[in-house]
Amino acid sequence: MAIRINGTDVQAPSDPRVSLLDLLREELHLTGTKKGCNQGACGACTVLVDGERVVSCLALAVQYEGCEITTIEGLSKEGALHPLQEAFVEHDGFQCGYCTPGQICSAIGMAAEAKRGVPSHVTDDLSTDTIVLTHDELRERMSGNLCRCGAYNGIVAAITETFVEAGE
Amino acid sequence: MIPFTYARAANTADAVVHGSAAGAKYLGGGTNLVDLMREGIEHPAGLVDVSGLSRDITETDNGGVLIGAGVKNTALAENRLVRTRFPVLSRAIVAGASGQIRNMATVGGNILQRTRCTYFYDDTGSRCNKREPGQGCDAIDGFNRIHAILGASPSCVATHPSDMCVALAALDAVVHLEGAGGKTRRLPFTDLHLLPEGRPDVETVLEPGELITAVELPAQPMAARSTYRKVRDRSSYAFALVSVAASLEMDGATIGDVRLALGGVAHKPWRAWKAEEVLRSKAATQATFQAAAEAELADAVPLKDNGFKIELAKRTIIAVLGELSGVSA
Ligand SMILES: Cc1cc2nc3c(=O)[nH]c(=O)nc-3n(C[C@H](O)[C@H](O)[C@H](O)COP(=O)(O)OP(=O)(O)OC[C@H]3O[C@@H](n4cnc5c(N)ncnc54)[C@H](O)[C@@H]3O)c2cc1C
Ligand code: SF4
Ligand code: FES
Ligand code: FES
Image (cartoon, rainbow over all chains, first blue to last red; front, side, top):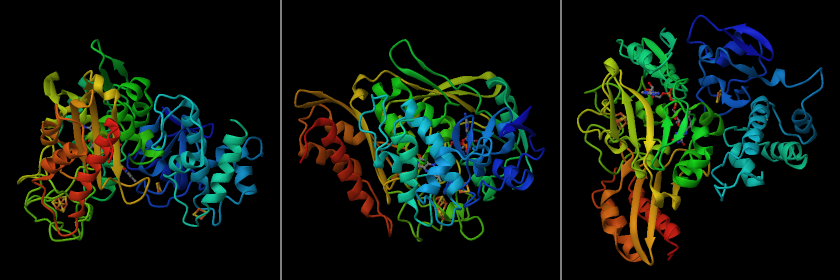
């Protein structure tokens, strides 16, 4: 069984020690996904697995055979940026850009979770299936992605424009 | 990381066969185990991937819920039955880790995650009885702000870091296990984890190779009125300093029944049996809540840096009982 990465089948590494992050960066040269802490704490390595956001540094690649991985490189369609990528540019959602691929993949997964009704720590009513992505909900749901440049205002603005105001 | 083998278990029987081999360990989402392997603290010879097994959440005949050990933390928190009948469990899960980690973490792995004691993690620089039995404990006289105030021993003062487990302790959860030869057994969740005593390296009553297959929540009608409160150094994405899980049943102005558990205070998720005893059938007043909190923390022993946890635990208990009963100061 292969791992499907951005639409291309890739053989799982024979050494089970290889993390999904190292497979992406070191073997496939998909260096958009970043290594910050390598301990699950910063979110820079976030990718989507079957549409769900995960930290690829704590993921053993062999465990993801049969899964479909989307990285930052897989988001643009026919050369056109994903709307969230456009919004990050528009709203200055970054300074150095190191956390950005993780922020963007995380936000896409986060928006799908909210749409499905997954509650967060700041959701008052647990019986609701309709999550309104307020500023507090967004910050809480994105707390697994740190930005050392402190570009949070731009990040929140970009996510809000793409997933809240656009009504996605 | 030292080399190891990897195998995906086809079913629980297959898992137990492989998991009983010398040096084998089960692998859930890997969010704790992979980290510890990289740090050189865990060094299994083989990983048996059980994350694909038992991913169902089913309603039981009597109104409870059976949760497969492979269920992801997010899937459990978002489950409608859990959200409405056992809100304390959803709240505890979403109070922990990050969205990404909750998508990876399994129920089995969350239960068996290991302490975040910084000396336990410091393989090269610190002494730790949990890592190396008999070596000594650098936390006891070290920087121990995050450490235990209840049930600790001269060998180890570490805490169990899970939020989810605090809710499971309050919900009278039952753990389903499968061991060598297909032998199954059920265990009250509160009997699963051990206090450190002289052997902090032995953290649960699980036998070698024993697999958690599921966690059962018996019906607990009062859990519809339940909640989880976590106090931490930042408002999100930090481990608990102190946390409280509680279910409450009111009978007019009197406390009919109650379940209470504490996190961040002990080597295991701490069921507050003493406080519950004080509360049952008493008038729901601030004085009652205070007496219950005092009773539970009466045996608390502060270390150099964590004395604040005693008062914090009391206040958090009182606040949560106030919130659930509608009786506030
Ligand atoms: C940055 C960060 C922040 C975090 N913050 C929090 C927090 O605030 N609150 C909190 O509660 N947690 C927190 N966590 C911990 C997280 O919840 C755990 O890492 C996670 O729940 C472990 O689940 P897993 O499936 O990934 O376990 P794994 O890492 O796969 O396994 C953990 C242990 O369980 C064993 N195991 C797994 N499944 C079974 C089974 N079915 N039967 C028997 N043994 C089994 C494994 O052998 C291993 O020993 C945090 C983690 C990180 C990395
Ligand atoms: S408190 Fe426990 S885990 Fe921490 S250093 Fe001491 S023995 Fe090790
Ligand atoms: S590199 Fe994976 S979370 Fe930091
Ligand atoms: S833009 Fe520099 S870390 Fe976020």
